[in-house]
Image (tube, rainbow, N blue to C red; front, side, top):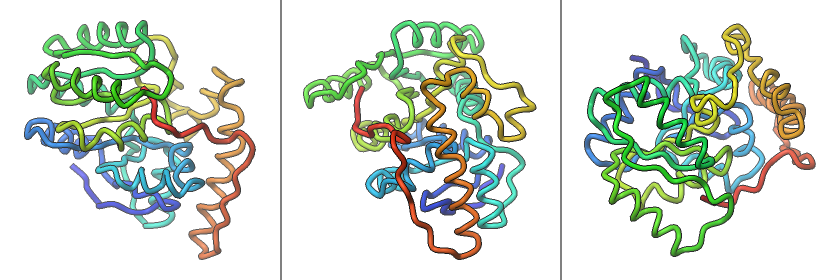
Length: 268
């Protein structure tokens, strides 16, 4: 189990951990009934914080941010000379966490995405891990929730008996949701994004060779070009430029390009 501490990558505090450490931390807090806010960030997630100081404070208010993307893992090595054996990929972390939840009889709540997606996700996860308990699920309303609706969500999750929540609202909304609900729910809240679609069988994952070489972004952009081309063609070069600038001690100037980020208001 590896834990090299927490280190900033473009101002976002990334935990230099491996899968075993991340799962152990989450399961430990779930057993104790303690709040624990978690997300797995790739380049897009890091850049949402780099380009928006308010969102950066949200991200740095979470308890654990793992390096989901290979370029984020490489950033730890470039800036802090920390070499991790692998990234902590959100979809893979989800599977390892669900295996542990099944073994430890920790009920799980699924929050976000569409009703079709979370039903397929629950079915597939329970088939893969027979002992897994899905305590409840609630799809996204794809809009900002009212105060009353937020209270109803909290009540629903508490009454379900869940010991941890998987959140799939997409970056950066899911990180905002986890940040806002972290003090309302005494359990781990884990933002896993595309893992919902991947494990529901609705979206293909990049081949292993592309993932290893940090090319998953290219695979995803080919799959969803209209939605993702701005994100990757703007943010990836901007990430690399500022990463090397930070390494060389050059003052970084974040430039917000048109349509490169999404609205960050919390919704459910």
